[in-house]
Image (cartoon, rainbow, N blue to C red; front, side, top):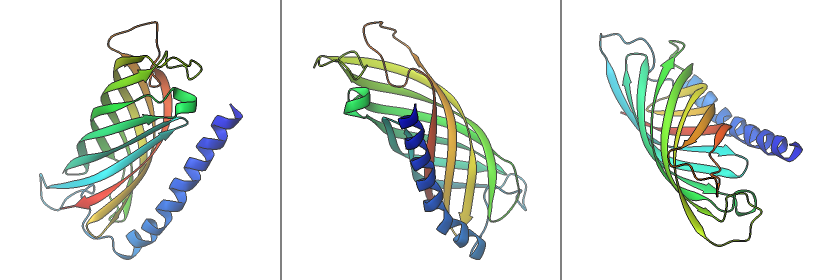
Length: 198
């Protein structure tokens, strides 16, 4: 547990330090805000970007598309997942993600948001997935992972950067007690995304 806490604290500190320059940039050059209340009814805009999510032993990286409608936005993405060989037997795979975010403010510099997101993962697991077994057998897992998230979206010129935290719960669609997926049950993830708005 101590090792887990240390890793989460280090990840949170990195995300905060990475986000600070963008906070200053957002204050200097806020630009038009896609998550703010629009001047015209049914105003829309889009964004493309990348994202990264971290939980001790689990790394998720991918690309995403955001479609903004007035203050809120829906998003679609694809991502790859990489598990630590030491902690999670090197589980890896790819997933399809979709979600919705609700902006909690109307500032042109950025806003807090709350949202929901879900993912469908297609992973390969070495051994039983416990990280303690030397077996080289490969098992497959299809995991459905709904979750909730919250964070802050910094807005500047035509870009955005978003640090976030989420709670995701993994459900195997094809249960098999002989092996475990690192996404099984509930986990807290720290995340960082950014991209270009157009």
